[in-house]
Image 1 (cartoon, rainbow, N blue to C red):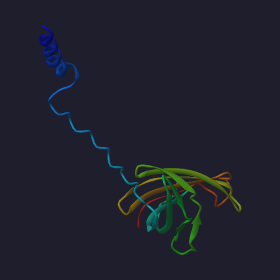
Image 2 (cartoon, rainbow, N blue to C red; image 1 turned 45 degrees about the vertical axis):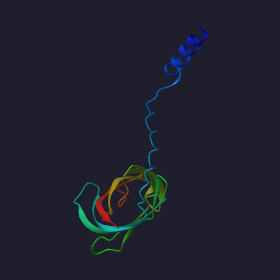
Image 3 (tube, helix red, strand yellow; image 1 turned 45 degrees about the horizontal axis):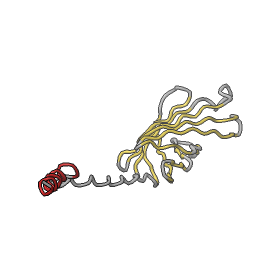
Length: 154
């Protein structure tokens, strides 16, 4: 009787503790996706509009440095025909995937505080950029709202 009881316990053990079939392989850890880098110099044509009047296509250039999900713009320089180049402060923006948005302000001579918003997105070597500048003194001649939109390439 003892032998039968011992044999019964041995037969029951595999059913309680484990299985004779191999377990599924562990799921591998996902490979981290590298953060794309958008640093570099960008140039091309932008539409330049002041005070909602006619838009003029102007050559433009800027440079970007990137630190994680923050991009810092060098000044945006546009070259309207017949006048000296104009420089605008753009500040920095936060990346969300390949899209970005930012806001800054600076004191100008004659126009008071200038509030700047930037929005856009990257696609390969292209940057689609919109920059809007609004003066705290919009009624002063030469201080109207300015908007620049365009696609610049690296």
